[in-house]
Image (cartoon, rainbow, N blue to C red; front, side, top):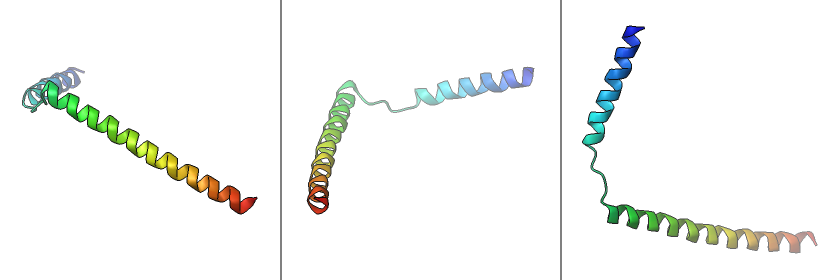
Length: 64
């Protein structure tokens, strides 16, 4: 059991050291990336919604 505890402790220490080496984005970069992702998602959702609407109209005309 002590071996497992040592392994967990070692893992947590190594993880903490690795996180210190990460090149974290600045606050401005994080905000810019977030705005880009949200904007891109909205544009993609609009595009797919328009396609869906168009296909549904076409299918309704074929069926009716």
